[in-house]
Image 1 (cartoon, rainbow, N blue to C red):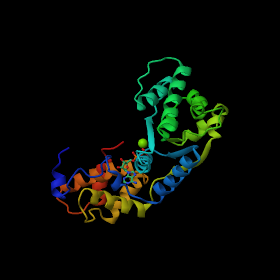
Image 2 (cartoon, rainbow, N blue to C red):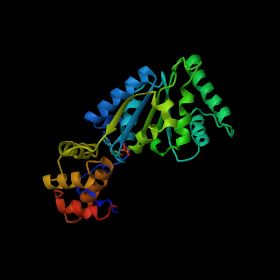
Image 3 (cartoon, helix red, strand yellow):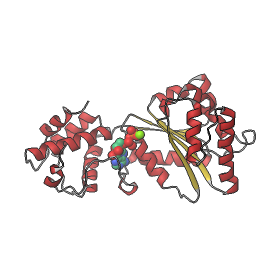
Image 4 (cartoon, protein in one colour):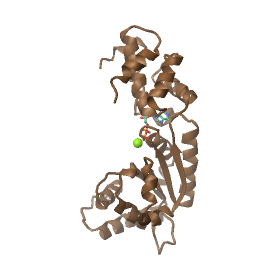
Length: 269
Ligand SMILES: Nc1ncnc2c1ncn2[C@@H]1O[C@H](COP(=O)(O)OP(=O)(O)O)[C@@H](O)[C@H]1O
Ligand SMILES: [Mg+2]
């Protein structure tokens, strides 16, 4: 796609991007509520769940909250889950500690991870936080075993809080009998929903401002169309809004209207 629309609307950069800086995260009610729950989980050294549909803002909210933790006090181990084996997850976690273990034994891997945690917790007086994004992809065997990483000294020392983020089926997976030891450690959960029309209006303005434009470029019908077309979900709203800007620029229309949003929608699945 050509970038002449940016010139047309005097956008200083690609608008509605995924790479928003921490200072540019829009602080609406949901991220704030999620933040409180995560902080509670960190304080109690327990498990916190963050669920929501694709594009509802889970990863962005995590990035915002974790970015606020002081790096000299916290070591955040952030992994994006896959549907692979538990060994793969253990390898990812160890990799975040800078440990490139190639063991194929679960027991050896668990021990190595716990040693890394102990070294930071007792040796360096840091707080380790394990964050697993896309946790809804994890296999059931992982849910059944993950809690063992949090058990130190016969489960008397809480040293590892865990934040699991993913789609709603994460909750279903945690309700299985085999997941119970992990589920029992959950102290708070937060579900991110799509924004309402008012939030979407603020959201569009917010992202235009990030790209350096303070004039509202979307008319009311366009905002409604983006809200409805995206179900209030931000990732889809980004694509609709950007596409609509492109369509509007093509017809040299200073305002984006519902027809431009409709044109943009034909490009998306
Ligand atoms: N609070 C927010 N402030 C600004 N932009 C946001 C916010 N939440 C989500 N977004 C935008 O929506 C996109 C999708 O959000 P993301 O966190 O990746 O969703 P999820 O992880 O739930 O799939 C992000 O790339 C970002 O552009
Ligand atoms: Mg995500």
